[in-house]
Amino acid sequence: MKLIFLGDLHGNLPATLAMEAQINRIRPDRIIFLGDAVGKGPSNAETCDWVRRHCQVCIGGNWDYGIGGKEFPDDAYFWRQLGDERMQWLASLPMEGEVTLSGIRFRLFHGRPVEPLMMVQEKSEVLESTFHTQAGTFGGVIFADSHRPFLRTLNTGYMLNTGSVGNSMGVPKAHALLLEGEEGDAPAPLMMTILSVPYDNAAAVAMADEDLPHRDAYIKEITTGVYAR
Image (spheres, rainbow, N blue to C red):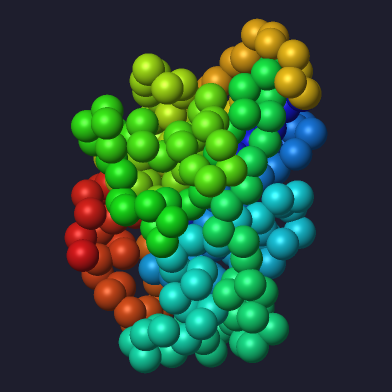
């Protein structure tokens, strides 16, 4: 069983298409989306539609809910691109999910608004608290939101971050996770791989029109990997 976990496309179509080409080579059994199809970049209808076409499981993120629910007037640029039907879909996405692979039950969520923003350097006790919910105790957690892919082993289990397809911090490439194991509850070997995919950053910059909110910050982020706002 091959599962791809990805998130934070953020309206970056060149990065999304580069990741699609890599996914086509891998030929996974399932693609699981962990939030933030939209916001930041200029191609929001396209990245939203990509998620809806390609992902078998979809979890919502803070940008999906904020834009889909029209929470912030400054997001009118994104509303015009998406239209009512897409925004209703974004606002209706579930906040959490789960999957069991090679005997490990993984909790799935975007990050915010379910949990505060968590980085790779977070204290172990903060990360470990996310393994315990009313639904029980998990052996792993997979999330997005911080835009930096990572894998940590904790006393409670595995903590994985997908990184970002369209707005990666640190290394400005498209990132996702590939997990390969056996479906179901029986313990079995599990491979956990970070996908790092180069894309045409210059083309992504060229698509950022003058009306894009915080355009300069977006361009700095996708070209340098340095957070700009």
